[in-house]
Amino acid sequence: IGSCEGYLEEVLDTVDASCTGLSRNQACYGNPLIDAIGWDGNIAFNSTGDIENLADIETLSLAPYDGTVWGISVMLLQGNLPETLPGQNITVLVFGDVTLRNAVAPATVHVTTTANARARLVPYVDNNPGNIVTAVPAGVQLNALGRNEAGDWIYVALGQYADNGRSEAWISTLVLQVSGDRMSLPLVTEDFTPPTNTPMRAFYLSTGIT
Image 1 (cartoon, rainbow, N blue to C red):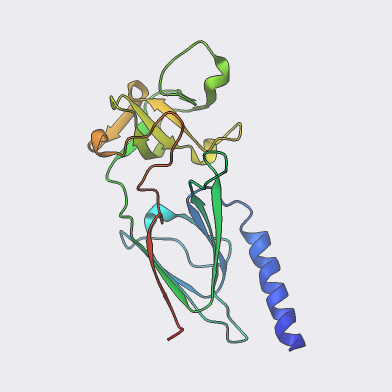
Image 2: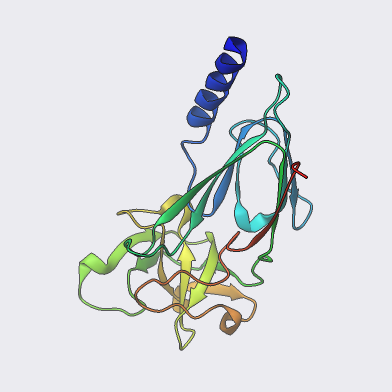
């Protein structure tokens, strides 16, 4: 029993140290073994510390604990929890004999900045400098999460450009190249209600328990 407890403590320490760079709507490979399948078949999720966008993952299958391996993955999901501030994250720890299949297909709309783009808290230009979250340089591809009613502002995940406590913001289509039908994106209200098609918002779960 002591050996088992020591192994589990070591594994959890490894997970904690390896997944510190996790951002919203991403999954971290915490501990072997995990078999990951991407929507397009091309995914780099093979060893401890690997991080992938949940939108790119179709299936995660984790190995059960057998004394030498214990599949563990940490996911940071965008949520809308009652009695909490908007935009909160949900941390999900998945371990053992479990398979998750993403029920949310990847978005068909992609955006790339065409100039130095100001990311804002609101989908319009005003004179309040506090509404500017950050600036994203030209040539950066971003995940499109939603749109305003007119479709001339896109709500994006900022990724590595997250700043001022915000990981999503609005960018005008005047400084974006949009691939796909922007109006097919979900409508996002100004109070930052999470888009309904966020990755892993719905998933299928199967376990080794029968």
